[in-house]
Length: 512
Image (cartoon, rainbow, N blue to C red; front, side, top):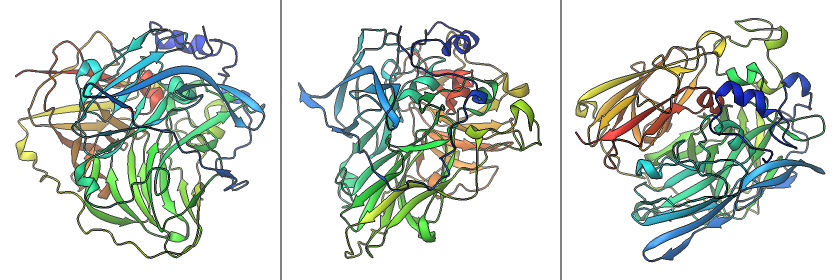
């Protein structure tokens, strides 16, 4: 059994009992044992390390399919120089390549599991057959290969692939089992947006991590981490700390993925400069939106254009908002002070910290954006023939993660949804902290938040949406094809520790 071994048959309590001793190298201790310097909010060393750009993997076309070969394996990474931590990677020691594919083509992905335990790979944001979804039911056993095949139905955008192991998603993603996917299409190509990978089109996987005193990666397993989700005290982008990018063009397209287990980020640019928001989870918005800040929860993505025409250095910044309502206050609130008070991993600040320093090579002509990006269909809630309601809750002290009063059960189908039927899903949050709600096999439209119009990021297609405490969000959706009465998809909170603890349900798409 390797250092990241998590038996899929274990229940949550057994997992937490065993996770700290699963194998050599994995540090899994209460945070009281971790007093590493809090560097998430530190400017020390900013812009010291060249940003790592994930390798671009375009696959190979074989017999009419674009074929990707992916190998999951244990690896090692120095999160601080000279100190090696055990990790998981896909075709790499940590994280994995960016897969590039086109809308309308058929792809096949051969996924080999080189770990000593089971794993899954979920294609986050994709519409595809349930048997190819990569959820907890598509377990890849040690030494086995999984080869799903499907048509790429997605609009051009940034998607991602990551572990979805039952009750083990949090530690596997934290260890590195995650990477980006680029989907391209003719509609976006015609707009002449920055699209040269690694030059003016850059993926940014933003993650926070906890290190112990020695500098080794640590995955907290205490009650605080279960309740609030694992939130680290060091910030990495594509696995790089204190990252800098040397830009050679006057306009930069940043595709931002919040790949953290639990931390929310409010992104901005230094000097209060505006950024052009052009895309959300499921592709281009109808038009560019000039914004000064952008909030992303775990699992959410956004694309922005940054103007570097004047040649001045610039930084992508973020603050870390508190996504709870007084649950973990500094000496106050529901769980303030003592053993369960706010710890280093739960640090927040209103002072921005650096995500990425950008150094232009010089001034260049300003590039104009088209006034319209995508022709989005009108949002028409009257199309819905049914409304379903989903209530997210955490129980007392976070001990009962649930949706509609039930925790995840692999043997229970919670909803049966007719294929091709327009529906409204009402997502209500009965808990005291915000939850990002993700629905598999669909790109939905946000109708409103407590009756109010959604912000610019939510005017396009989404697969993950923030639901704030005591708030209700309504989304309009339709599962267009791929009915299967026996194999389910998931809907769940994308705070990974909440998902692992049971804030997840299952639905099947059936013929009406």
